Length: 78
Image: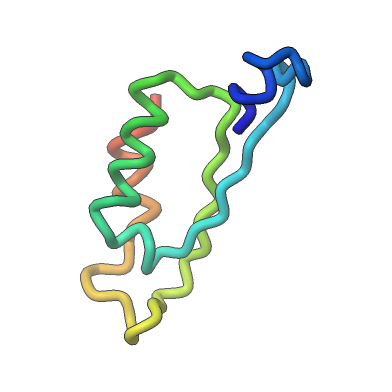
């Protein structure tokens, strides 16, 4: 949406930050990890992901080891 505003000369968005609030249940889905991968590949340095790690999803507890934050840091840090 920021690029939409900037490309049309409606607003200078070069200093804007976008925050995405996600749950660990969402991050268990391949689509969510794919979105972060795209953000990394496109070097979207104004995008901040905030992940709530409560070990819950809509259909019950999160499966797996519950260490999604560590997994994501290992993949995307640096």
